[in-house]
Amino acid sequence: MTSTIPAPDTRTAEGSALQAVLLDMDGTLVDTEGFWWDVEVEIFAGLGHTLDDSWRHVVVGGPMSRSAGFLIEATGADIGLAELTGLLNQGFEDRIDGVLPLMPGATRLLAELAAHEIPTALVSASHRRIIDRVLTSLGPQYFALTVAGDEVGRTKPHPDPYLFAAAGLGVDPARCAVVEDTSTGVAAAEAAGCHVVAVPSVAPIAPAARRTVVTSLEEVDLAFLRGLMTEMR
Image 1 (cartoon, rainbow, N blue to C red):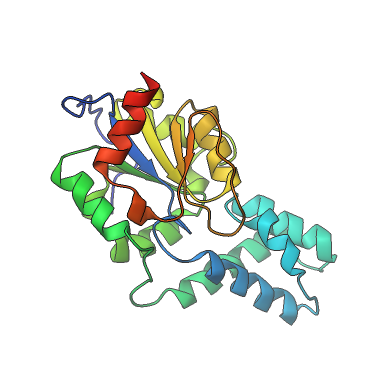
Image 2 (image 1 turned 180 degrees about the vertical axis):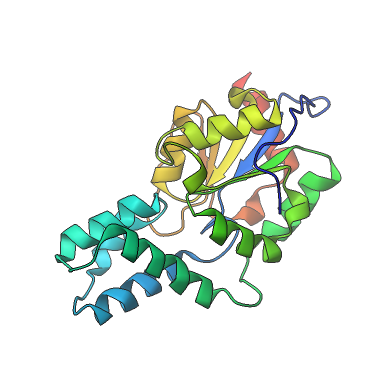
């Protein structure tokens, strides 16, 4: 398992202002956002409730407590937050047995960052038990650090997970490139002062200052990420 509190590493990518790359997990590296929604629909169907498809954009990308709490309130289901969280995690784990579908370009990007010794962290709102399962498909060797949503006081959309990752890698958040797929994750990264590459999965994300929107990870490579930092300077 990747340690969540590594020794500080102050390496800087040679010839570039880029110091590290921080990546979201669900919907960014692994094609699992639909898995979460399917689990939510199934659980609430068992409770006698039908989820409105328009709620997907509300629950995607955020902390489990927020998503579960919203669905309980929206449906009026007779279930507690702790019980629902446990059911959601278990249901998701049941769906990811075996090899997970990776997003196009994910393996190539991770391999390129590793080959050039770019410090890389996985920063997710998912719980540790989920991250450790997904890492078997992603490859734990690609990450110097992983941050789970249940290991920080405030998870996305707060900046804490990305600030924690940057501190753990010994780098400046302003010289980190973050890759995210949801507005919740983008908000967290921007609040931390990072430059964001948004690859929208469920809902559109508009370009903005310090934010570049692409349609696929296949458009993202090390030269692209270094170019973003150069433009900022």
